[in-house]
Image (tube, rainbow, N blue to C red):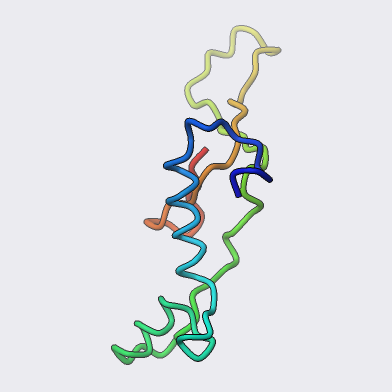
Length: 98
């Protein structure tokens, strides 16, 4: 992930956290091709053992963050910050870190 995303080396901690997040949602042979999260959900008896992967996007892709409360004096000022995706936030299904 670190090589293919071309992110800075100072983001090694973010890369490790994102790798753990993705590994916990990937099936493994040791758990009979269940995901670790799915295995735990099945163990406690929840009905949906597979986690949703709809919110995942390409790691290291360009991301835009909207600037709230921007004064409207100049119509040509940028309305977004440009960054790169460097992680996923597990508190919300569509929250990303960049």
